Amino acid sequence: MTNSWAHVRAETVARADASVVALIDAEQAPILARPYYAGEGPPSPITASLAHVPEVLEATLPFVGRILGPTAIDLRAKEIVILRTSALMECRYCVEAHTTVALDSGLSVGEVCALRGEREVEAVFTNRDELALISWVDEVALGRGAAPEDITARAREVMGDPELVEMTLVVAATLMLNRYCSALGLPTSAATLARLAEEGLA
Image (cartoon, rainbow, N blue to C red; front, top):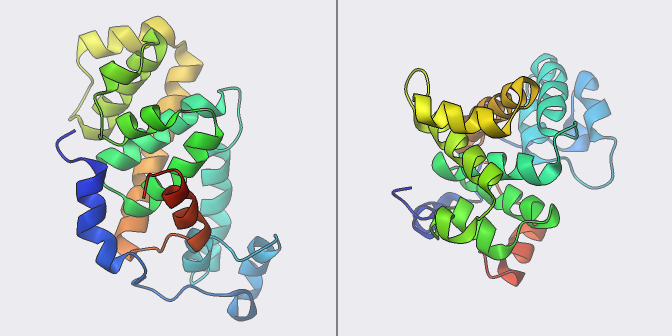
């Protein structure tokens, strides 16, 4: 990666709390959006911004939840994909949010830093399957057209068709969210920022 996460964070910190659109709270939520406000605590900034168009909210959140949520693929592998993609796309909101999720899924601080571009991936990750996955993510997120044969061959050595399809879709869904969150300047929660500071990852 050409930019480390620290560089990207320094460039965007000034606008980190200035969302381009108003975030709709529970009292203002349209009727169709209210089921997405039923949980404990405030809704995520993604939910609170999508509430402007509840018919889109109703389609988007279940889709994203199905793709990024629990499936047969373990959470650690999914978080490698989500965090790496988000760092490649320099999405401040997604990197900050998924740094904490990645830690909770069993990734070490060093592994998180490598995925964020702050350390060399090959110096931190030693598992061949995870290295092949990271190469696949890098190519899907940044490449043009079909992946080169060597990267495809490595990915196919460690993933069957179902896993390859799902991991590619995780990259694609993350790219969509990266663009959405970055364009709208969605703010990171105070709790997430506090956790990042506590872990030395702010």
